[in-house]
Length: 57
Image 1 (tube, helix red, strand yellow):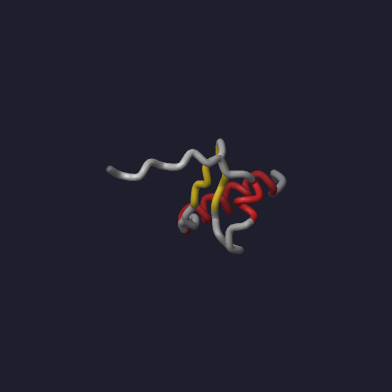
Image 2 (cartoon, helix red, strand yellow):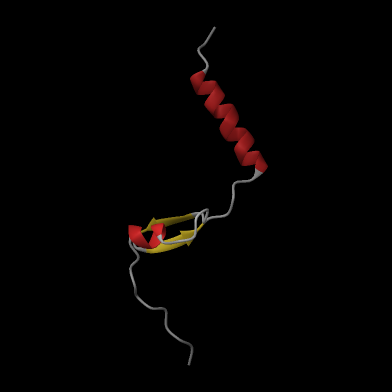
């Protein structure tokens, strides 16, 4: 019989205890590990930032 998932809720201190540089988020007591954003995502985010911060001429 397979092992059951333990019903432990994680806290902010669990996230802080992860190794530095680990990309993770805490949602409803669950830790979700995140991948790095793609180059395309970073380009779009940069262009959007420029669009909303540069005053209109």
